[in-house]
Length: 329
Ligand code: UT7
Image (cartoon, rainbow, N blue to C red):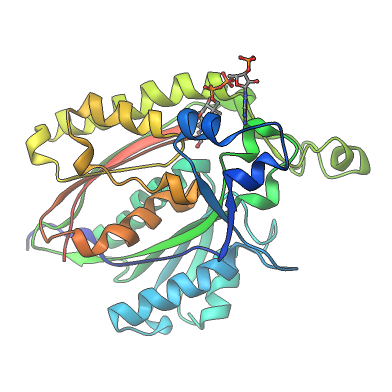
């Protein structure tokens, strides 16, 4: 029997209705549309409004739409991996909350935390369950309600992030389509540059941590930028070399959407033109775990069976990596 690959057989996404524009941010912090656009490429981002709403409230419509497209019911799912840095609550896992909401009665699940690289780590992890023959239908969800951990008085971070969620279904394929290779990396020494100070076991929530806004993202932008721009470009080039792919062989780059300048640098390093790069950062900003599945969702109708896709991400931790996959439909 030929090798089993884990192929994406359906994708879907969901973004909330509320649009936070650069113009509205100008009324909140000392910033301007020109600065944000030239430094990041972002024009607007979506915000999930509503008391008590969490990341699973975006995952439900994304996943229900995915199941409908694929023509299967939730109880056919074997496993749900929910990649997020903003789970509904510290526990239980958002994967379990989602499973309950959509009626995935036969699935087990867990959350995966790798900041902005989470969806790539999730795909790579999920593919092992498919390739081994253990499971037939694994759902990988990537999403974040970043607005829940943003300090809207901090102009360096609040202009970047947005809310959104996407999902992909992985199934076995023996015709050579699906995930072919992955390179994943972590470097914990990146912690000082991008983290959330409080709310974990080392610094639980207190009145002081709340007053000091330590439950919000802390990012030292320039330092992160330097690591991101080098490592995301390098790892994308590395997976091309490893698989003997020329720029002509690559049909699409699906990059994490953190900063348009990082995306452009990655495409340059790979030697591919901008027409092959999925970019929606201008409309959604950085949705952390949501960026890559939201791109796949928006470009789904343009993708052809056999297309070579390179997915690449860089995130807090630091975490980074790339995946090479052949589109299966
Ligand atoms: O997704 C996870 C990984 N994260 C990333 O990959 C993010 C990587 N970093 C970045 O994308 C960029 O570093 C930022 C977009 C966060 C910042 O851009 P930058 O070009 O690195 O700006 P900077 O932090 O070096 O700041 C340049 C100037 C400073 O002023 P001075 O000191 O030169 O007078 C800032 O105070 O821009 C100022 N500034 C702003 N001005 C207007 C910082 N934020 C703003 C703002 N509006 N929102």
